Image (spheres, rainbow, N blue to C red):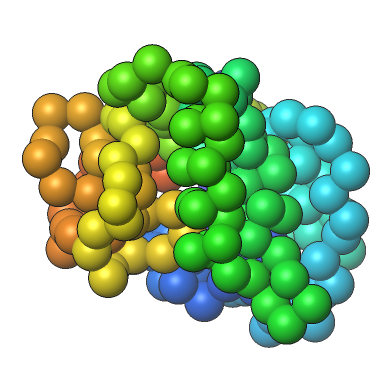
Length: 202
C-alpha cells in the first residue's frame, strides 16, 4: 500500500459539497485539498459499468492532467429487488433536459419495485468506491458500503439524491431525516474513507 507523502491532493469532483466533506476528513493530516473546478478540469466521460471503473477514469485523468495525486469517487445505490439497479446509473435515472430530478428517479425505483412484486423489506445499499491515483499511474482502491432498505413514501428534506427513501440498517429515520454530519459519520463514503485514511494517510 503506497502512502500519500505530498501536501496537496486534487479531488476530481465539481461537487462543492463533496469537496467540503473530503477537505473536512483530511484536515487533521495538514493536506491542502483542491477541486477539479479550480484547475479547470473537464469531467471525463464515465464509460465503465462498475463503480471502480468510473472512479478510476476520473482519478487517472486528473492525476495525468495536473501532475498531482488525485482522488475520485463513484457512488450509487443498489436495490436488491431491482437486481442491483440503478447502481452505476444512479444519477442517470435522474437526468432530464432541464437538470437532475431525483424525485422522479425515486418514484421510478418505487414503481419498479411494485411492478415486480418485490418482497419487503426492500433491502438496498449505498456504495462508494474511492480511487487514489498518482501521476505515474499507481493507484489504490477503497470500496465502502452501508446496508439499509428502501422506504416509501419519501421522508425528510436534508441530504440529496436518493436519501429520502434510504433508511440505514439499525435506524428508524432516513438519510434525509438525519443531520448531515451524523449521516457523514456512518455513510458509504465514510466507510471507504476510513479505509483510505488507514491505508494511505496513517
